[in-house]
Image (cartoon, rainbow, N blue to C red; front, side, top):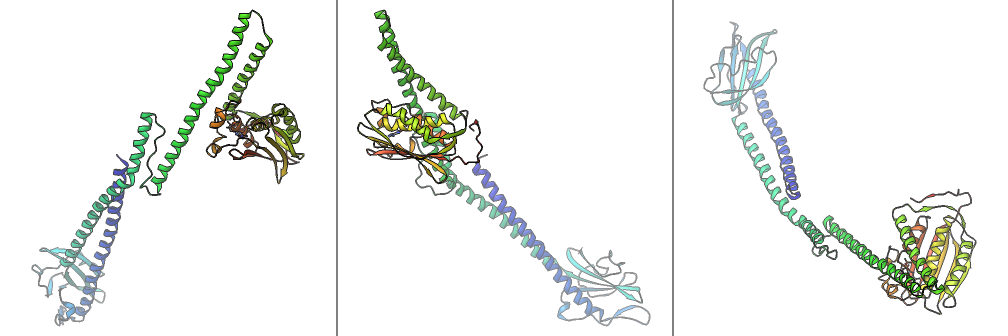
Length: 466
Ligand code: ADP
């Protein structure tokens, strides 16, 4: 059963049900009020009639006369003797030569009851008449309540018709409004089907004309998911192409060098060096892929210990000077003594990645400036370069795995695999820190790393990352 039909049935059943219950309550309340009114008339009339009743000297019940006040209009009176026979009768109802009812004749208290006599619906008040605790007769007063019945019946009809009409109107209104409300869902389904059939992640569900309600937000979220999926899909595809390319080049060089050596019949140091260099590159690629896979699955172990960040930074600085040669001016402007709780090798990996990137993406003659300072509760490392910068389009994505800016992809330099920053970010966040980037295209890039300082009393632990 469709959601639309289910909701329609639910809404209309609720509307009809509530109206019916409410209507029935009113019906019973009005019925009780109407009967109470009749009972009051009968009680007041009984008082007037009782004022006229007396005992004859022969011990019989008698009546001075039937009262004729307005109150008595519609009230029929029977005076019954001890045996239940009619002594006096004001009733104009056919068949009223006998008591209106006999069930209550023996009762000691006055009682109300309802009886049907010859098609008349009567409300009867039965009052036992006593002399010195002995019942000497009974007074019965009756009132025709057929009008009350008619009123109740009309009320019941109105309630049922109103409940039915409301149910139908609610059903129609729900059906139509749900059609409007749910039609975007049909569009979502349709688009999702088209996407899966055509393998086309570039499609989006049009947002025009949709209110900013649950469905509008669902569509927006769905589009956003598609956007991310498309992006992920594209970067995976790009990665596959990149990896194949990265693998092919060193393999071609290795194979070529081996073939050459075979041809000349001897080993050549230059050719061997070429093979070694390319093997190193292949190893780096495989290691990076392995790290990424471990980080991704949460299985990258981090061995925490107290780390002197300033010493570590100086070591990396010395290594990186070799890479920078005279091409780029690499310098440290500020270095505080800083202790953090971390995995030394992994933190070294992050520093190497950021500084080597800075050197790589800075043209000859440019600067790469590094600093380490305590800022509040954190150690802050800044790596600033005057290089090519990162475009606004690329900036939000550079921490994604396999992401490489268009520019750096097309560059002739050894541009890496687009994994370094994603692994670096993983490492820093799993140290309780954060990594930030600012960049202006053509002017340069600044990376900032914040790591919590080691508190003197903090225990140094070793463990696996979550
Ligand atoms: P890669 O190994 O390709 O450098 P990274 O994950 O380290 O991968 O960096 C991702 C991308 O971010 C790079 O391809 C490059 O486009 C950009 N990038 C990183 N650092 C810099 C920088 N200092 N200057 C300009 N672009 C940078």
